[in-house]
Image 1 (cartoon, helix red, strand yellow):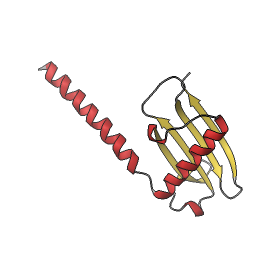
Image 2 (cartoon, one colour; image 1 turned 90 degrees about the horizontal axis):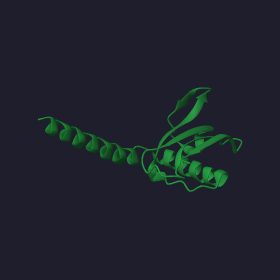
Image 3 (cartoon, one colour; image 1 turned 180 degrees about the horizontal axis):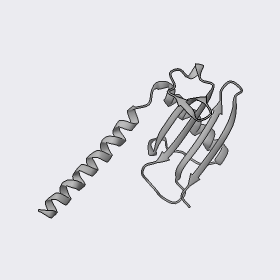
Length: 119
C-alpha cells in the first residue's frame, strides 16, 4: 500500500510539473513575449551568455510605482518595464539560474540588471 501511495504521488508530481511547464509557455501575451525577447537579447549582450527562453519562467510587468507593477497591455505604451526570469530545469554548470532586468523605454536605457548562473 505504501508503494502504491508513493508511486501515485510521483505520478501526480510529474503530471503537475509537465502541466505547469506547458501552461507557462502559453501564459504570456504578445506584448509580454516581445518584452521577454527584448530583455533576453539585452542580457545576452551585457553578459555575453546564451539565454534559452524555454528554460526560464518569467515575471513581467510595467512599473507604475516604486514597488508596484501592472500587467503589460501594449508594448508601445509601456515606459518602465521590469522582468525577472528563473530557471526551472537544466541546472548545469554555466546555465543561467535567474536574472532581473529593468528598462526605460521612454529614455531608451537600461535602469538595472543582474544575472546569476551556476558555477
